[in-house]
Structures are given as C-alpha cells and as structure tokens.
Length: 345
View (cartoon, rainbow, N blue to C red):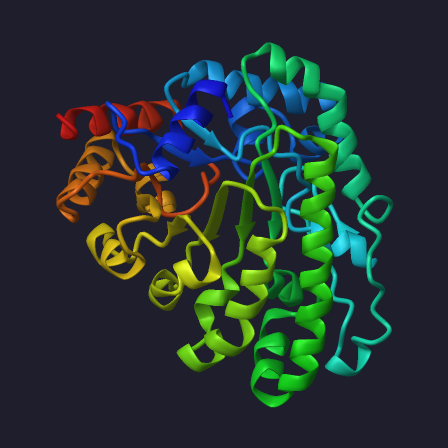
C-alpha cells in the first residue's frame, strides 16, 4: 500500500475519522494480467512484468487503495504447493492444484511444510525481495502478510465436497487436518513478517467458512481463526469472505478481526449491525455482474444503493463485494471512484 493510504488505514483502525471516503480493491492475478495485456503465466514468471503491471495500476488509479498491495501470489496453487500438490498452470486461465487427500486417513502422512523452503513460497518471498527497492521508491511498503484460510486450503487439498462431508462425518479427522493447516498458516505469516519488518497487517481469504452452520462455525472456524489472527501481533487483521457471511460477521470480534470484506448479497447496514461499529467494512457492489459486466450508469446506481443501505459512512472502504474480477475496464473503475465522491458529499 501507498504510505499515505496505510497511515489513513491505521487512523481508521484507531477509531478516528478521515476527511474523505476511501475506495479500495483487492487486485491479483485474476484481473491484473488481462488488464495489463499479458498472459497469466507471464505475470507469474516475470518479476519485471509483475512489478510494472502493479505500478501501472496504482498510477492509473492514484486515489485508490489497492489491497494488500503488490500481492506476491500464484493463484490457488500458492499454499497447496507447500504440501506437495501437483500444480496446473494455463497461459490465460486460472491455475489450480490437484487434490492430495482422498480421505482423512491420509492426514497423518501429509507433511508439515517448511515455509522457508517448500513449494512456491520461496519464490513469493524472493519476488518481493527483488522488487522491494522499487516498491519503496514508488512510495509504498510491503504491509500485509497474506494467506488463504484453513478451510479454503483444506478444500484444495481434499476437494470442497469431500471436505464438507468430512466436517459432518469425521470431525476428529477434520480437526487434525485444520490444526496442521493452521500451524502452517501461522508459520507462513510469521515468516513473511520476519522477511519484511514493514508488515503490520494480515489478510486471510477464506470463502469456505460461509458454507457451514452456526454450530460448525463455533467448532471448526472460531478457534483456528483466533489462533491465526493472534499469531503475529499486527495492527490490521483483515478477513475476506465473499460467500455467505452473516455468521462470520457476528463473530468477527471473537476471532480478533478488525477489517472485513464480504458478499454483495448482504447489505452494508446488516453487516454493520452484526459486526459492530469498530470493524472496518470493505464493500459492497457486485463485482462480476456490475463492476465487470455493468455499464457506467449501473456502477453509479450500485454505489448509490450501497451508500443508502447504511446511515453512518465511517469506517468503510468502498469496494466490490469480492476481489477485482477479470474484465473490469478503466471506465467502470473511474465511475466507481466518482460515484463514491458524489454520494459522500
């Protein structure tokens, strides 16, 4: 993030008011390569193209907060690679990791990754080290340690349907897998922070937590997320869950989360009521159907609707209800930014 944006984010975390309404988007490999005019493989394999495309995004939209900012990632292959998953990369499509587990009986043989050496993790760290000087020279710092969440990673290693069945049929095995993954995430976040002392934020992305009921949430999610968000002692504790998020929203405080990105299917006011006044909300117009596929007028109408859903506009970063999807054009991003300015007057 740009240093000034980061300082303003900390101001919000501390409960102070800004004199403007910030706009922020999560940007990564689903959007940046196509927008910049390169292949996904080019983006993953060239430090120069990765850096220049991110720099172009921040220069094209200088008022926008890009979260987490200069995200070093390899799509959904990132974390599974450390466990030994076979990775499938496509020139223009999204990569994916093949399943490692056919049942919970294989959890004991699943390795506990060394985050300094295993899979793609050293490449992620080295990309940031190679480009840190250029990032700093552009007025930014590496501010976030990032990882997918434990249920998200479990679904990659086992398959979403199989893992959801295991939560119901084999709770002991599910706990064993989630503990192993949670320990890995804590190690990975801590290693990122050790490599880059400027990090004072954590971003965890996990949509699978939106697919369980309240009892399962209390058993399989709260204890592991509490451990993850407490593991590094950072100021900014950011959760992305753009699936069903009502149970999540009312448990954010217990999990130690102070910043929440959620589904556009939930109104701003409802999430505020559930999350409480202290949490920074990040949202909330439809990412694919409006920001990517809609007209400028539809973007404006969606922003107006979001503003009308909540009486107080404090502690909000206006965004899409999800990451930046493929195909979003400059005109719609500019329209979003202008709409936020107009409706915040």
